[in-house]
Structure formats: structure tokens, C-alpha cells
Amino acid sequence: MSDTDATPPAAREPAGENRAPARTWFLNRRRRDLEGPVEPIDEELPRGIRLAGAWSWRLLVVGAVIAVVIFLVIQLRLIIIPLLIAVLISALLVPFVDLLVRHRWPRWLAIVAAMLAVIVVVGGLLYLAIWQVAREGSALSEQSVTAFNDFRAWLTTGPLGLTERQITDGLNQIVSSLQQDGQVFITGALSLGSTLGHVLTGVLLALFSTLFILIDGKTIWNWIVRIFPKGARAAVDGAGQAGWMTLRNFVKVQILVASIDALGIGLGAFFLGLPLVIPISVLVFLGSFIPVVGAVVTGALAVFVALVYNGWVTAVIMLAVVLLVQQIEGHVLQPLIMGTAVKVHPLAVVLAVAAGSLLAGIPGALFAVPFVAVLNVMVHYVSSGAWRTRPPGGYAGPPTAIWQTVPQVVRRSRG
Image 1 (cartoon, rainbow, N blue to C red):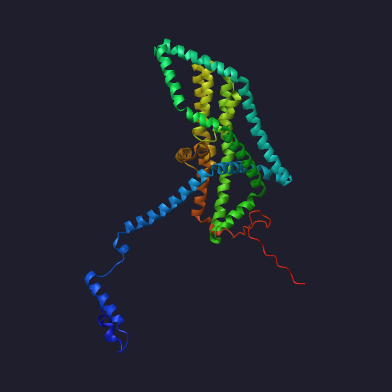
Image 2: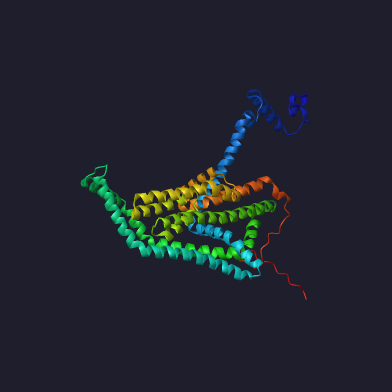
């Protein structure tokens, strides 16, 4: 302690000055003598505890933001799901539109041709599937009843040796369970009208969103980039473009994989003489967009049809065909085709599909893999620092954009 600190302010100040600082000095000196030197709490904690605390509250904030985003997505699912479907369709149609434009097609005509092609292909597949189901639905129901009676007879005469009373009691228990849970089915039947309305609204919203993304997608993206601070726009723009290219590759490759799955299982059903070949192929094609489990679940329909119509031998052969197609997809198509387009580990695919299905059901399982793939590429782009060498962009939209809410100031020249 220096002599200056040891001397009270009253002894250093001239006479007649305010003596209040002297009282404060004596009180502070007394407290310091009793308590000892005061040190910050952070300096008394181990460095590991301080790092863990700093990481903990930041992770809690990030987790809270993610939870809020997921909650909003679930609440707005009737809007988010059609919009995401529109983004996937646009990722498929943008290269087709650009190809037509390079061949001197007017852009509006190229967009109309692309939209009509999607509607015709999807509508044609659904029409063929519904037409064949309607034509052979009665035969399928009759075969199902016959197969059920044969199965019931096998239960009584087979190795199980069940009696008719035991089978009847089991069926009665199943019927009573369905009656107890009948309120769920009644509620679902009552909400059928609203569900159809939601589906129709979602289809229209997806079509309109796809149309406007094809017409003005770049301008919409530039407007989104301009929301971010100027220092982050290059990173956001570069990451978005990298994610968009990954999404385009994913959609093209997934359509190829789904087509191969549908063709393999459909041909197997055709050569085994099964009915409903077209509906089975369409369902397998649509189900293949859910990796790992989609084609297996839809392929189970082919196994069921084979069991009902041609017996258990044909059903076992059909099951072998489904498993063979899945093995070819998992060990040949996914590593060679999908692996070059989407850099996602198979374990990450399985976990993403499981998490997506738990959070949002079938839509969550459908969008889980493209979301993880795009997010992976965007994070790698930002962390690589490649955006630092990008030239600054204007990211300006046209003056007539409907989302430009700030009025422009028009200066009139004085005459």
C-alpha cells in the first residue's frame, strides 16, 4: 500500500473542503480489512466450469429457438407442407425450363409446358391406378374372403388345432376393441370433408407456389437475402445456392431410384401373374421417396395381393423380389448414385427419417433427408469461408415486386 492510500483524504485536502470523502474512505478501508480483497466470481471458478456454463446457456438459447421454429412449422403445416412440395417440384422443373429456354423457347411457354407435363404425368399415373383398382376391386374383395376362409380352416385343421369357438372368441375380441375405439373412426369420418378441403387447398397452393418460383424464383431469393445484414449476405447467398444445387441433385436421383424400385417390383408382380400391377408400381414409386422404409412398406402390398390370389408360395417369391430390389437399392443405387449427389451418411439418413416421422409423420419422413442434405451442404459452405472471396452482390428486386412495401420517393425536377 502506498503512502497516498494510507493517508485519509481529510489529511490530503485543504481545510474547509467537504469532508464527506473521508468518511467513505474510512468505511471502505474498514470493509476491506474485515473481508479481505474482493475478486470477481468468474476468476474463482475453474476454467472448465466457465466454459461449460458459457456453452450451456448458448446451447439452451439455440435449442429454444429450434423448438419455437418446429412448433411454428407444425402449427402452419397446412401451408408449410405444400410450400416444401412446391420447392421439390421446382428443383425438378427448373433444369427442364432452362433447357427449353436455351432452345429458344419463350420463358412463359417453357414454364407452361413444364407445369402441364407434371400435371399430365401425375394425373395419368393416379388415373391408371384408380381405374385398375375400381375394375378389380370386387374380385380382390372376393379373393380376400376366400383367403380368410381358407386361413380359418387351416387354423382348425392345421398344427395349431384351434376350435371354432376359440376362433370366434378371438374375432369377437377384435370387434369389441374396434367398437371401443370407434370414436376415433367416427371422428375421422366426420372430418373427412375438412380433410378433403385441406388436400384440395394444399394442391392448389403447391401449384401456385411452384408457378411463382419458376417465374420469379431468383428475385424472391434476392429479397430473402436482403433481409440479412450486409456482412452476412454473401455467406447466405452462397450457402443457399449450394443447398439449391444439392436439392436439385437429390430430386433427380431420387426419381431415378424410385423409378427403378417401381419397375423392379412391378415386373416381379407382372411375371407372377398378380392383378393390380399398376397400383402396386405407383405406390412403390411414391413410397420410395421415403428412404429405407418407403418401398418396403409399399412392397408389402404386393406380398399381400400375392398371398390372397396365388397362395403362400407366390407370396414368398414376391417377398423375395421386394427384398432383392431393396438390396440392389441399398448396396448399389444408394452408394453409387445417391452417394455422389447427396453427401449424407446412411446412419444420418435413418436417424433423420426416424426423427422426421416422429415429429411430423409421413411429411416429416418425406422431407427429412433433403432437409438434412441441404443443411449439411450449407453449414459446410459457411464454415469453409469460401464466401469471403465472393464479390458483393446487389440482391435487388424489381421495383414492381409485390413484397416491396417501402414506397419509393419520386423526385420531380423543377421546371
